[in-house]
Amino acid sequence: MDFKNLFITSFACFIVALGVAWSQEPGGFDTQQPGADIASREAVGSETSIAPFGYDQLRIGGQTSFTSDLSGGAALASSEYVLGPGDVVSVIIYGKGGGSARVPSFNPQAERMSTTADLGENGSVFSSKLTITPEGKIFVPPIGEVVAHGLTVAKLQENLVKELASYYREMKVSVFLVSLRRIQIFVLGQINQPGIYTISSLTRASQAVAMAGGPTPLASIRQVQIVRDGKVVQVVDLYLFLIEGRKDQNPLLEPGDTIILPISGRTVRIEGEVRRPGIYEFRIGEKLTDLVVMAGGVTPQASLEDLKIENIGRPKEVISISAFKLLVDKDPKLDRDLRNGDVITIPSAPKTVTVVGQVQKPGTFLYQPGTLFNYYLGLAGGFAERANGGSIIITRWDGSSLKCKRDTPIRPGDTVVIGAMEIKGWRDYLSVAMQGATLFFIIYQVGKK
Image (tube, rainbow, N blue to C red; front, side):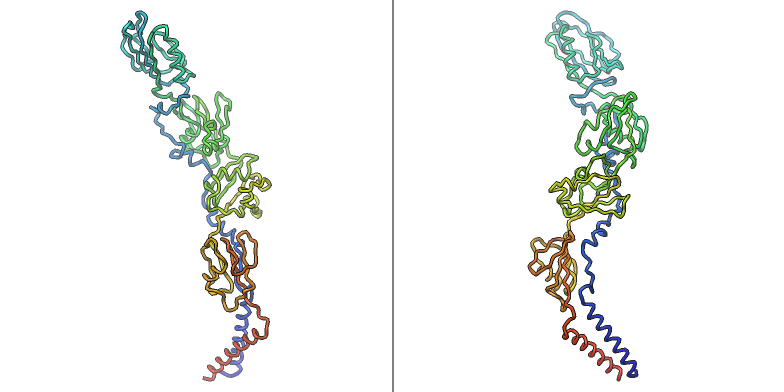
């Protein structure tokens, strides 16, 4: 190797060494702040399928499912259950008559009749299962037809006692609901299996929807129409039943009722640290806090710094709102109206601290409550050779920054950047020159051989 080529090679190596030295200046390493990566972290899982709220509960196997066996169910009827045509009741009468009377020997309503008995001084028992006729009556000897339609079991028993008082003394009357009437209803609209269904008289709107296969993805379950005799008698909000348990929003059905599930008009999506992430239908005037309540509230892992609001119709528009001020301070100015297509993200609270820059082992470390910067500096192996102890910046999770000292308290989500000393003095330049000269000498010696 001639001296000319050796000189060119050595000079090139010197330039490389000088470049390496300059690369240690602040900005020579990645100083990306945590806030710059929030979007990418929140995007993870954003494409995960999120179901519309309530749809799973409104299918067979969900919370509102029930048996399709209509042979029984009378035991589930409450004391407020209203009797109607098709219901079967058991009537038991025991009493002593004031004279002689005969119980009729035939009753076309009765599934089982007691034998005819003499109602004399010794008394007798009448026991029979009676089906309420289409006219709403039952046949009870010796008084004949008795109206049962529209009455509770207790009220029917009370009426029988009054009617039989002139026939018996020391009388006892017991009435029990044996089996429920069967009714036909229609389920139409945005439903998976529209059609005619035979149900028991204890069936509620949500259960009928479940029998019909549940709502389609386009269905509204907040504007379910109950049509009776050609008129909409009630518009049901099944959210209020599923979330608050309000039975007035999940009514019992009557013969011939039609349930119609219209197309949903306005929806939003909430994801992240809420108890029930999902797609929610909303009404005009409902706000952010209403949505959080519908979603079950935030989890203990939620960050109360900022929640993010995007909209599928405005992909470039991203709004950040302080979750603490909205949910804890309840600032009405931040409680904005929901818009169709909104996507609200409640981020997780950070659990780590990142240390980068002029340290021996840059990295991310698990946050320990009550710790200071010096603790994480130790985890990072201490300062590197060119660390500038006066140029340490902490970037908080909320995007704010401050200068850091060894005794500065650290918060979860902090990123600590340790800067490098600048090359300013003649000693710094001499050090670089000596490094280059040493490299030149080594190459020269190798070239001589």
